[in-house]
Picture 1 (cartoon, rainbow over the protein chains, first blue to last red):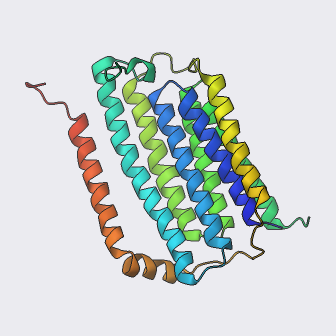
Picture 2 (tube, rainbow over the protein chains, first blue to last red):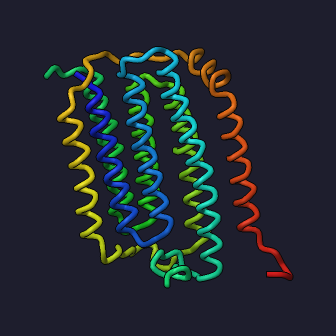
Picture 3 (tube, rainbow over the protein chains, first blue to last red):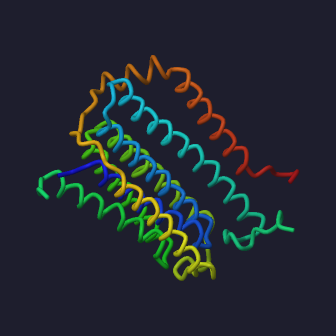
Amino acid sequence: MLELAHFQVISAALFAIGIYGVLARRSAVLVLMSIELMLNAVNINLIGFAAYGDFTEGQRALGQVLIIFIITIAAAELALAIAIILRLYRNRSSVNVDDMNLLKW
Amino acid sequence: MIITASLVLFYVAGAITLGGALVVVMSRNIVYAAFGLLASMVGVAGLFLIALAEFLALAQLLIYGGAVVIVILFALMLTRIEDFENLSDHPQWPIAAVVAIAVFGVIAATIIGTAAPESERVSLSFTALGSSLFTEWAIAFEVASLILLVALIGAVVMVRTSRGRD
């Protein structure tokens, strides 16, 4: 029997994998991909509640509308982050996050 | 525990999602990692379908399966990382693994310890989703489109090579 808890556990696992990727990988592109994984974990959680919660139709629609907004913001964030990575590559010839220490004192 | 078709499909989609995500964070080759992300996003679209959200599954396939993975592959080509076939992890990776397992443990323990509502999946019609998005959340929708426009213009301005003065 499929339950809300199934969606929540998958969401938590995907979020934890994303955290590991953000902390452990060195390439900025891979860190960005891990952030996308974490955003998708949030989406799975939201869709689980929108499908299973004891809500009115308007509240269910809000769950899906929130996911649409998260996908939009993720696309905007991805475009800006890729632009920043390309700019950094031109300046420093590297996309390794360890080499980006200009703001570090 | 009753095995139903939706449960089997859920486990298949969940395995694709988590397997792709593990390829993203474990692979030594960055191109394989990009394709792992593609597999993971398709798995998430499957989970959306199982949660009876057809429109979101379609949007997920188009935006993540299509656009996002292609943009990331373009970024990989434009940055020409010399050691893209032999990536090394940060030396702090054991700490990262501990943090990830701890986060998962805390969330999973909370989920299992909380009584879930005993209810069935309820689908939402396209009409209800559309009317909610374009009436109740119309202002937020317009703001989101403005944010997308500003972000894309900003990205173009940032990567443009200005000859002469730079």
